[in-house]
Image (tube, rainbow, N blue to C red; front, side, top):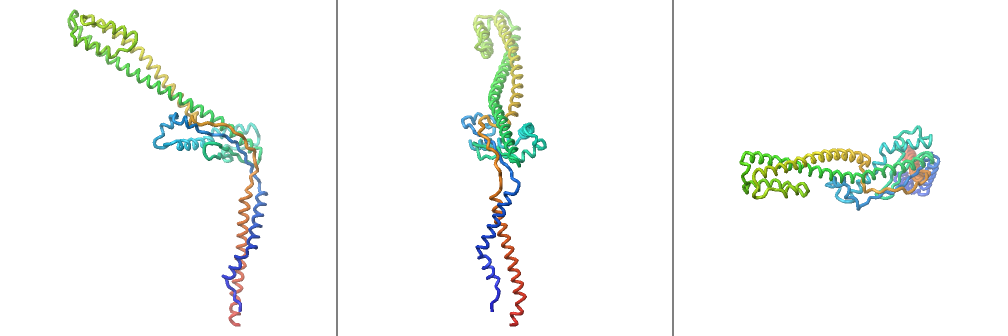
Length: 360
């Protein structure tokens, strides 16, 4: 008597390779047909060339300010800049400018929002080198327009930003020079003020003593040390030093000479105050200029180089391979469920027939 066995039935079922293959192939064919029947997207790209000049990297003051501990080598610096650029191409100002220009080109863009346009765009890149700015649309013409316009806006804005970043270097250097000049002028002013007060104190003390007396060596060297420590290699100071009192000079002659020194100090203090005022005004203007240039630079490095390459025309995108694979898997699942139902029916039939078989 032959009995039905589940294990034998499963073995036979899963060794029906021709039938399994047929279901898989039919599923693949159906998936492929569905892929071509579905509405297609079109994909266009504007290609740009992005490079990082390694010879100018360490001229970037912003990089130097952040080099420890975040950016310890050129690769980190490059990755930082590529990530910066990837964020820049999606900025609101760039997307909105792109959309405004598209609306001028084609009325089909009138109902499109900035968020919708952003969702249809994508930047494809691995590292420095070729970047593809991709646009997708249901219409080939619109895909071409979006990719070309976005690529042009990005190219111009990034080029402008890099130029501003390079201007920042000159502004930063000028700010450093101005700050140094201001510090030197302030230090000189403080030195002049201190020496002037010392000379006035000496002068007041000397006027209380006999005017015709000769200076002692200590008094003379005290006065000369104060003045010579202040003197500069300039005509006014050279003339003062040449006219300094000698060892036979009286106290009154020295007081008269100190009067000339104080007059020269007062003149230089007045000139320094005017210079300091100009340096402070220049410093304020440079700070404002730096802030404006930094905003225009979008935080990009002056070491970036960017060039246009070409526009890749729109191509029809059909997920044929994916849909074919999905169709094949669905075909296998259909076969599996069909066999599962068949085996289940056989199992029920066998269970119902078991009492009759036992009676026999």
